Length: 127
Image 1 (cartoon, rainbow, N blue to C red):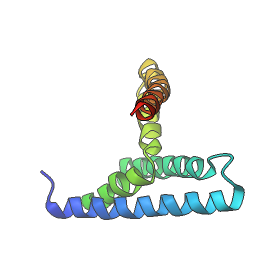
Image 2 (tube, rainbow, N blue to C red):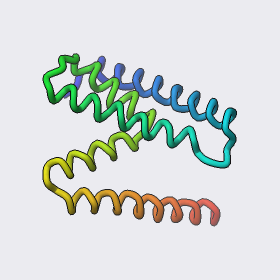
Image 3 (tube, helix red, strand yellow):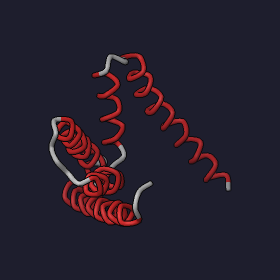
Image 4 (tube, rainbow, N blue to C red):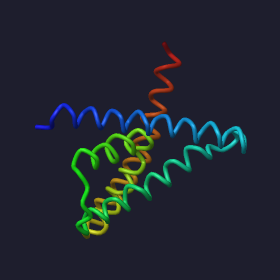
């Protein structure tokens, strides 16, 4: 069971990640316009890089306090982007030889996300 302080650190990381995401998105939209989601693309790609970098470093014995690791991964990156976790999960499935599972996860996430998004739009518009 995690200590209360761990939840506080995750919450702080989540707050910072959400604020940074909003700031980057606002800045890029102001700079390059809203015709393309540059901000979302940037945070998703950069978050994927950072999470996978951390996974590699931690697997090589890089020492990091568990609360800090959770604050950075679950908290900061979890609110900065959830795409980073998706990317890491896919890469780990592929790396462990689970090619079909990895591809199924990609297709299921993209198609499922699109279908559920469409369902949400339809439901929301019908209310």
